[in-house]
Length: 261
Image 1 (cartoon, rainbow, N blue to C red):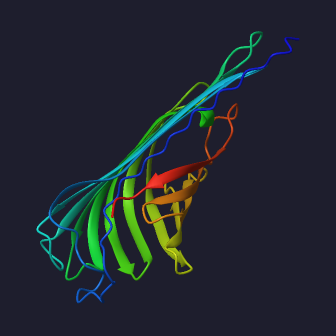
Image 2 (image 1 turned 180 degrees about the vertical axis):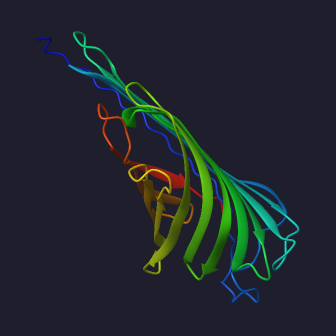
Image 3 (image 1 turned 135 degrees about the vertical axis):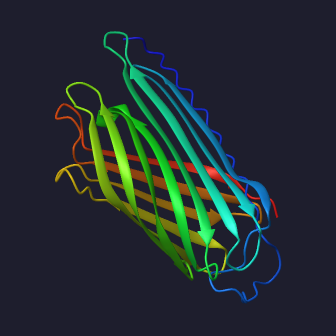
């Protein structure tokens, strides 16, 4: 064995967000103050890790969140579009084995129409998801529903149509189901730390074992006024994954976030 092992780990994470300054004031609009009209890039994250030793590994991940708002106000005609892109790539290999590659790409688009206040909204949604470790070549979801906001809690439900395409030996499926999602933000102490939790469950009407779920947990701990340590975990479960693949995919990351004041 070569006595000299080399290891290189390169990591970078950048988060850009718009944060209001000054003391928080109670909002006169149920559901909270609207965002200003226009486009806002709320988050950009990039990370890379390279390992060279008895085993070689390369890992790359991105995270991009964007918001477009129209007719800023309390309730209709206030509208908002949320776009969330999360690509990642991981490759492991050694000189005498076939590389193990994991590709996990997700894209979510949600357009919200606020109704009589900013606490109740209707929405349409589109989701694209690829994960070769689950045997899923592509899942497309299209739907529409309603949501409510109460303090730090947000709940929504929709009816959606789903197309799933699998790697062999899986077979394509056309599904109809309902998307149920809840998000909750938990403030931690007086230093601005917070824990964000999201869980989505999608039961399917026309195939008993075709349901899936997606979970997210994100911890944000400020270390200065502009910098924070972030810890995130993603969990994706696919009940009808082909029998030669796993049904669950879990990934966690640690990074540094920057927020302009």
